[in-house]
Image 1: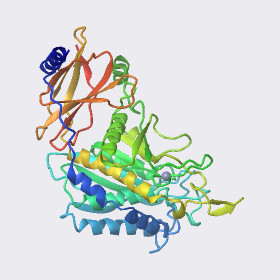
Image 2 (image 1 turned 180 degrees about the horizontal axis):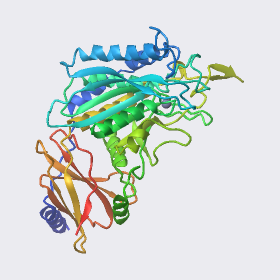
Image 3 (image 1 turned 135 degrees about the vertical axis):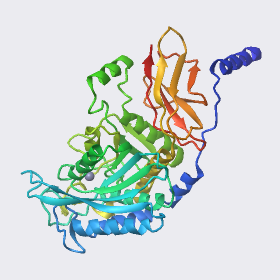
Image 4 (image 1 turned 180 degrees about the vertical axis):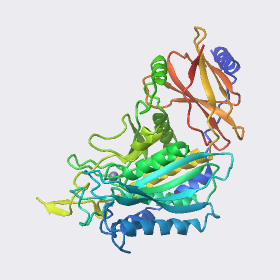
Length: 449
Ligand SMILES: [Zn+2]
């Protein structure tokens, strides 16, 4: 029995030439996570609420009320963080004009996304990460620009996460560039995000991932009264919006119905969140967004970028898009008192683990393929090393075809590997990894004949 075991282990190692290593953990990421404070997030949300309304078409002249004052305040905060960034963090209000559309924009208006860019330190690395929340808020009538619209959760929570991450991450340097953005016009039809996505497309930005955070700070559902601050939903599109005929053919040939780039990103988020953030798991939702609702990741998906939405596990519809009032004993409105700031902290940390791992990761391998030349009960892969710094190694990720998440990881130093699991029975992906475990986004291998 012992002998058999010995031989099978020996054969296995010989056969695969694969070494298993401990999952590396980066102490700097752990340190950054301790720097994200619920009380800072709460202070930011309270400040954003203090502007009365942040409706996209509200006052732009006042210093204390309306969207203009909110934009100036967010920019001034970004500029404070910039002082500790060695000149790498710069901020701008990216103004643009939007035409009246007879629907949610009643007159030609100048809008502005507030952006802080943390420039990557490697001049040969043009990868960009974007994290967003939306600055604008609304009440019951989407055209009401006067009434108080606190928008504490929708979406001061997302903006607070973006700002907190800009503050903590700009004290570090990353080879890739990170853009922290508070967009406007979400409630008027994703106008600000669309402007940014189109700018990115026109300028050929190499966007690795776009993380939209919209409502990440409430933990109690309306109606069903469920409370859950241990899960965050990540929505990802099933079939890429711009999928070509050729890509559709390949998807069908490889049964790649559940491995779009956005879904591979969502799984990546799940892996790093559950590695770095205590008492938080990621619930992968296999759709682009919720029914009847949209989000700022969608214009990015529609322009061919890899984008996902973070959204709280339970939504409270008494507190979304509501005039402030009490009716039949129910208090309506998106108020600070309904927020769960420790939940917001954990969700911010999930974004942090994702951004930091990706921004420090080696570039992804290219031309990843899986051999399908012969009938065999193993799987043989090959790929090319990415440009730039040579990765420490590569990870082949494996899962059952019926599983939602990766179940097994094989570490290899080479750019090819054979593993004793049948290619017919699993899904795989390959990623490059450095010594500290920062992994690139996984690449789904194409068949090699
Ligand atoms: Zn929202």
